[in-house]
Length: 200
Image (cartoon, rainbow, N blue to C red; front, top):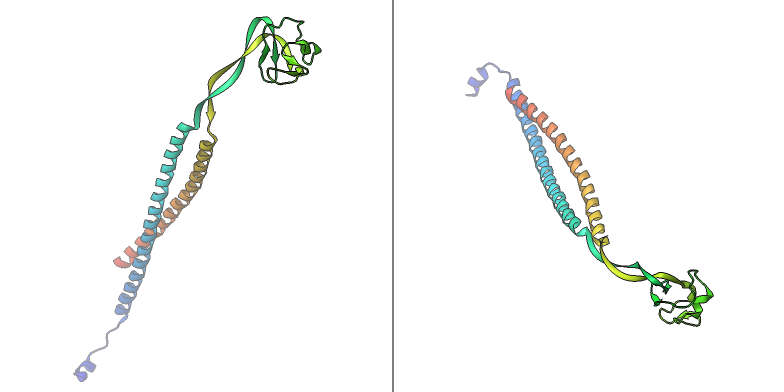
């Protein structure tokens, strides 16, 4: 049998080598392609998780904005005109002696104030403040309350914190989107190379 085989003419093997080379190259490109698709899949999943996280934070920020401004009660003094003089403390707005009947003065620190019934020496018996903080006015202060809008500092801090975190995540999101574009370009190139290998 060996004698018969040895009588056969020699055939070139370049074609087999070319096929083997093509097969090895195809295997390599398919592996690269698979790795590229895996990377894209992982990046897309990371992108989805980040988008979901940003969306949740935006919802939280929206909910916090509803709690940011609270209506709170504020006490204030309102001057009510009177037809007579009153001894009034400018430090605490208290009417220490209503319908003051002695000599009138609107000058702060006036010695006349010491003669007022409300005083015992230099301090007021009603409010305890020094006579120099008192005057005679044809009005009396009335304490009132009103509701005013007030920003809750804790809620404001939480909103700022969430907005900062979102800004950081948006930056990461942008970088991931850029990376996916790069990987898509590489994958398209690999697909073309595989197509060329297969069609040759």
